[in-house]
Length: 411
Image (cartoon, rainbow, N blue to C red; front, top):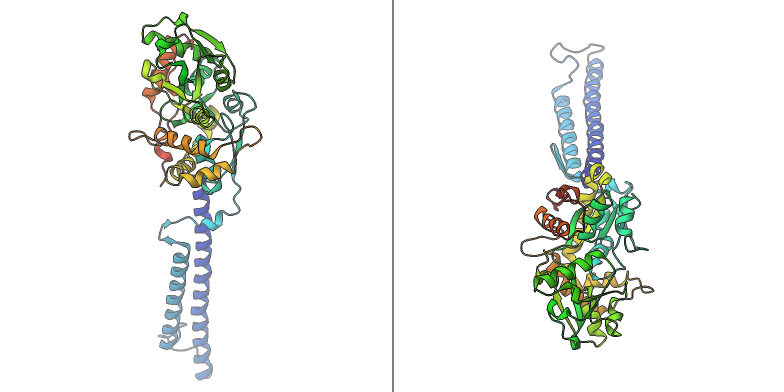
């Protein structure tokens, strides 16, 4: 959108300048003509009706020529001043941002993975600080009513952007033929961990033997537990998997399960600690799981094909929001807190501050700028999922992701 918007502004700005130049040129020409006419009149008057000498013709006297030349010079100076005021130089014109004030913004509905928390802070910063508006976008944040709304609504064309999970995106694209692709990764490394109360003494997958692990009921979580147990030589059938739905934390604190998979290190860990619990956790990627992105931005195939510049504008503004989150964390967290959903998911300032400290080095690393995603990473996860029987075929990487970042970088 920025490119097309800038073009529109540029066209409007240049049209105004061309119009001004035309007016000034006409005025200058009028001065010349008036000077010439004045010369003719004077000659006629002073010569008793004579039309003037052949050398004078209709050009007037020498003083009149000088006056006309001065008028033309002043017209050129005025035109130059107009150019300067509009910020243009020759053929290279800077956009007239004031000309865009009446341009309608392109509405963008963004469906979150859950209620607002620290991982979404950059979005709220980009809204609050006008970064989306500067890209010609009117971004509206939507909360999911169902756990798959972020992908379902985007696939159906009911929302432009969804925030969802990498492996679930692969599953949906392959098994359900969902017409969606990832356009950017929010976290470069997983947030999903194996979490337990410290008193349970669960520190590796080997400690699952004879224990109960709570999960959200997905085949993906089952496959992950199976894989990490096999990685340490433990028998996956020796663990009891219990579907606890969304009650991951309460199932642990009430003793229903010994550990969980699906809690996030940036949120549930500091939340439980604030409530006075001592916890232990470990990463799935420490035990044979390929690295995977935690949350990706999804867009549907139609929009990717027809409005790539709109998506690039969205990513640019997100990048600016993240820069602020990284460089001005406290202020951005305050923006988040003012936009929290207190009724359904109230936020603790202390928990969100700890969450931000966990998130920032994972959202951008030394080797991977914010929103980077690689074909290699997607390929590794596709292969892992196929090997685990989670997808029916191995798709081409371009079926599940598209790289819009090179041309989306801020100028």
